[in-house]
Length: 245
Image 1: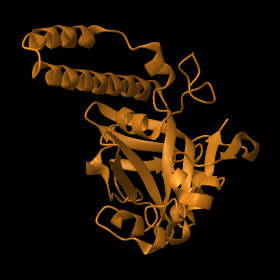
Image 2: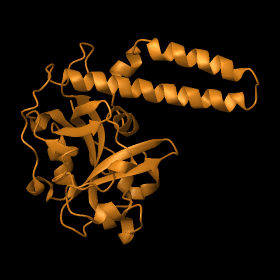
Image 3: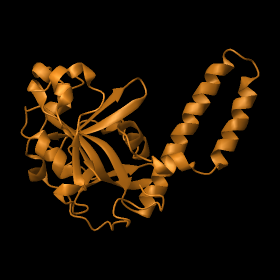
């Protein structure tokens, strides 16, 4: 997001965007990942509706993709949503800290998905809510750290309380504004996407879905290697990451 707080086109978009229907998701994950660039993900949060323009995705092609959770046909309680019909959400937890959100592709039983890596706020209200959600998460993590310290240092409780009050009134740091949702974990925090949003039919849901967004020329989409899958041997070098420039 630019320093003017606008999205990739320098403008915020109205809410009059057509919903993506089932047909949109009925391709393989490579095609879906490209087509999702510029589309808008919508999620109802405790603070109101947030809308994020998708600016980066990664394709995971299922049973033959060594980078995929379903490589070799692996089907577990965790990966079950990947086997569901295109347009289903797949939310998983990593590093004991963050959620990641994916959208499945293709027919029932074909475990492919597109990881949504980055979004930018589609309107001013979404930007404000995203900032508040990011700040609230930072405060929760800071409080948790102070609580752990309190178990070791008797006077830490008083210190933590004082810092929590200060956090509630501080301005949104420039780093948060600049990197509001430019990573899978930050995205889920900024849009309040949790495990409760796993296995949702996004072609039917009224709380979690996708809409049309901005028109994107093919020349503006760069391809690159997927991130964080060094274990995937040759699949780690596939250019299956798509980024809007």
